[in-house]
Image 1 (spheres, rainbow, N blue to C red):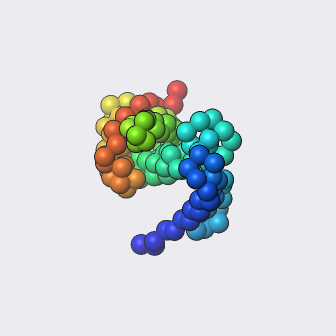
Image 2 (tube, one colour):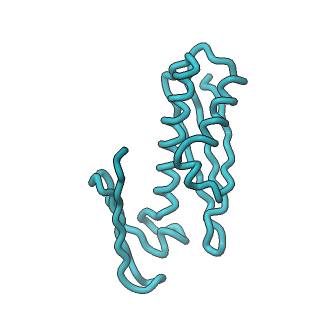
Length: 139
């Protein structure tokens, strides 16, 4: 399996400084600051990137579980809300997923979604964080 890389640079003090984060693949590069992380200033932040990674990993893992169970999905869409609390600490991640999965019962979908929450590699890496899941089938 490949090893993935990322890079970050921070220049200056915590509150007045600025930084850049970029993915080793070159697919993303973004500026971040105290304001973009702890306030509402423009730019990205580590928690936003963790949320994107978690939503992507979860969606792929759930798709694999659905396919293995005989219910290949048309789509799995997941949003992640990463809650940064005083400390600072990532206290909770809320995953909200909608699956367009022909032929599956709601009960089976919910079971597989819970299995994906427990089994996706990013969930495992974030085991110290409370992860809440809201899952439903597309109407």
